[in-house]
Amino acid sequence: MSRVPEIDVPAARQRHGAGDALFVDIRDEHSYSISHIPGAIRLDATSAETFIAEQDKRKPIIVYCYHGISSISGSAYLMQQGFKDVVSLRGGYEAWETAGAVTSADAPSAARALVDHIASLRVGDDSGLARARDCYHPDVVFQDPMQRIVGREAFLEMNRRALHAASEYRIDFDDVLESPTLLFASWRMVYKPKRGPRLTIVGASRLVLRDGLVCDHRDYWDLLSSFASSTPVLARAHGWLMKKLS
Image (tube, rainbow, N blue to C red):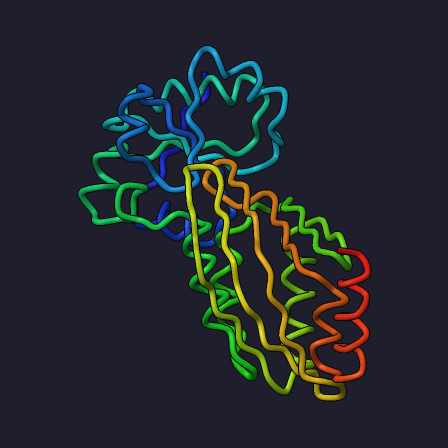
């Protein structure tokens, strides 16, 4: 059997921050539920077959256990199954936690962090999008009343273009309700393009998390009401139409 390569905690933290490796936790379910490396997938005998069938065997994988011993054999097993880039975390989860690296116990969820990043966006400052990138799954699906976008990079680029085209932008979140796999948030957004009317959009978002990352993002808002609010004539017409339909 080939020698299993190892990675130390500082290097693993860099890979975790870059988001270019999948962390695999082979500890028991109770230990994982208490605390784990954010975004890590728990792998055991019952989930191994599905993991092997569904995961991209070219994606870099970092396997960790309690102290860095069992992860050696766990990594070797994945290598035997055809995974091309597998390393074991030296010292295991204990070394990660001792080094002060972020864990699920003290880190905000990806969805909650995402709300904070989006709220920080301003015209001329899109740094929040770079931070938001770490909250999204690479294959995230986004949908609102106007469009459907598949993929993290395409979604972030859409937001980047919209922000650069604005002369005014602000979003304020009201109620935020969260569970381990879902987040609902209501918000009010002010958006004024460099050419065009100032819009006030009231809406809500539903975020679904998988493996600690947002994999499905749905925004709900009334397109007609948003445009009507910016134009008095449209506002009156919209009000009349709503009365007729009620």
